[in-house]
Length: 86
Image (cartoon, rainbow, N blue to C red; front, side, top):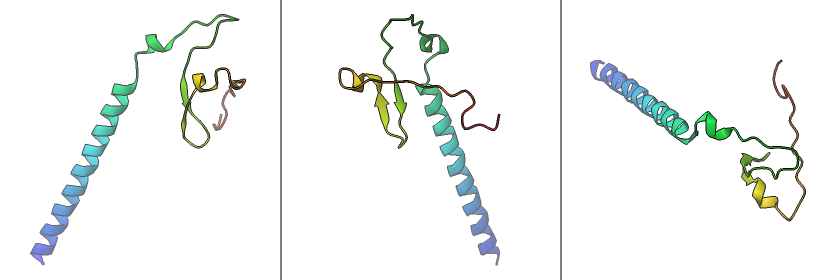
């Protein structure tokens, strides 16, 4: 009975440590990939070509704006508060 309790505590500690390590790894990776806000700001004037950027499509695949250059027209639409409760 005592061995069973010890095994349960060992498993619980192990799961907790693995979970904590994963959270730390993902948060560190997310912070490392984000450039400073100053680099994100680009001033575009009317008539300027759009800067290249990458965003996920509806299936999650990463798509670059430059992938469409010379092939298709691109329309960007922004819906304020789309998919939010507000």
